[in-house]
Image 1: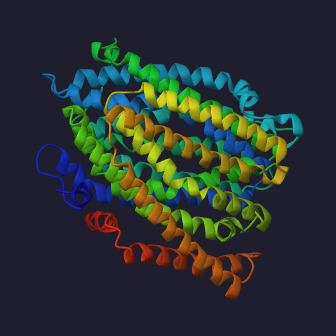
Image 2: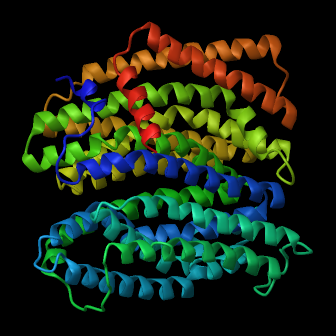
Image 3: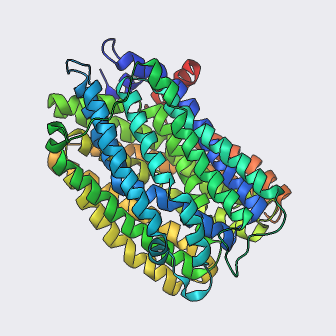
Length: 545
């Protein structure tokens, strides 16, 4: 049977697959709601506070817990811990002792790391913020960091508890918990807005009520996100006991974990340079970058869950069985389905970027000029959406083959390409345009990573059906270009310039549907075979949800 057509079929019965397939629709909906509410509080923050040095300081400080958590546990957890938990279920006690041991060791390490990170808050500020141009406020970043870095412990608790649930094929609570977190942060922002006065920038005071409310309220959201998983754990019968010592199975994966940690650490070099270039340029750049990146990831986050849920388990099984042909078929199918769905969306984002930025962020304190910059940054980087998805897909293939070394080597090359280009952005581009250039560089780096990953897999696995993939991508690019061209032509003839909220919404509501309908219409007219399984898969998942 053709592998593309196979995606449209339900997974065969047996094992855990039916549970995963049944849950995938609910997961897709939960992911969409989570992304919307997460993006919602970013919009509310821009409306209430603006896109300025205060939001930049908060954004930088709020990324630190994520970065440190990834260095301590995140990458290892995603690639190693869940398979270990699944294997431990074959133990006489069903894996109860091993799971408690993992929680004990993991939480102890995270607690120590959290204490060290909070103490080192000023050092992190010095690393991530270039305060030499007075476009950033290092003291405010440090104040927020003291309040936000305790999130590391609760990010780790959430991740470990999620892994336990996923190993038991319980996905719903993990998917919906971030929604609760986002609602807590939205409540925090409303409370912040109701408090009188403004955040003091000179001098910065840790006792400033607005600083305390914003920092502690955001941390509370992560605490709640972890705690809401406890009832689900009780329902599956899990009871935690402190169990000390390193299990032999953890030591077995030590080398693999080191490569994954290396991958994360190298990727953070690019993040450090990105933040320093942005903070040296002009205030608001970090916030614009963060929000544009969130918008950029939204299509992949939703479509990746709904389209690739059936493909990724197949790749893992194929790799475990040593079935190279089946693994290659699934990689090819995933690449082509991603192209069919994401390239037209890239075209829509390119043509509607400015309108989207103003429509979503132009209200309140954010202002039209800053929100236009956000939209332009998104438009210039939208071409990287498919390469980003391909890089993520390729990583899963490598990890399915228990190869963590190659992704790390690819990340070294990507970072070596990225860092000089970032410095060129800071040196050659006008300060108010640096964020646009930085996001452009990001997308170019994903192109490099996707090409390099494909070449490496070709050496490793042989024929990857690359001609078929390239053909589908080329057709999708043509369809996207026609759709974007139709929307652009319409805007030059009949639509007003984007200079207000009203004109932004008019352009968005006209250009977006036109570009989307025309692009997918071209794919239908050209009878692209991957279109049907992609759309039918999404339709079935939504109906299941």
